Image 1: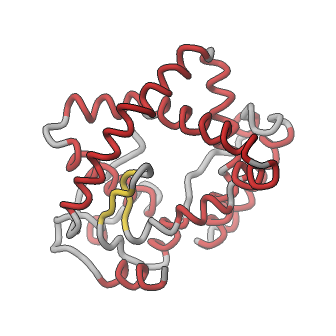
Image 2 (image 1 turned 90 degrees about the vertical axis):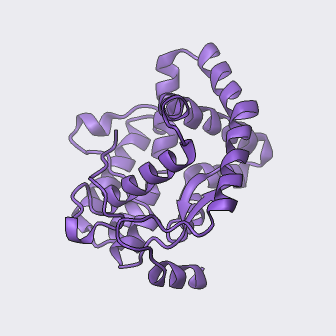
Length: 236
């Protein structure tokens, strides 16, 4: 991990260009991911949407969002956002208790807004550059700097620890349900990319990198310090 972080801090691309020295490998992985999506994830999402009422899908989405929220709380404090960290910890506690394990989201009604923080953003705040772009099997778009968050987000997930102690009879169904929820939530965006982009790989790569810059700077990347010298890229 230390070696990857050093690369992330030192490697860079000419201004206005994306640093993608592994493009051939990334494109092969992108093709693999699209094939996996076609034969497994997309059919899984369709079945899930067909047999699960929309209100129930919303509850499932809230559950997984809340279960992974400790990662946001941790990185709030690692980035020095103490007030936001306390508020996000409160959000997690409220949704876990009043929201019945996270199935509902009463915290938003109480004025506790949802934030999105992770270890990749924390490294960006600490001054590490993005390094090389990576497309990771199953996970999809990433960078050398952001890849360590896969481990951090897993270890801070309540779902991971629930599956760890309860065994495969719980972890496997939860993993399948999580995959169905994630793919269902992304259906509209993936359909747009696949149908509208001349080169889906480049479109997805550039959009993802711009979105990461947007998140690191909390929606206000300064023009002079924008990592990829692109226009602001919001949540949509």
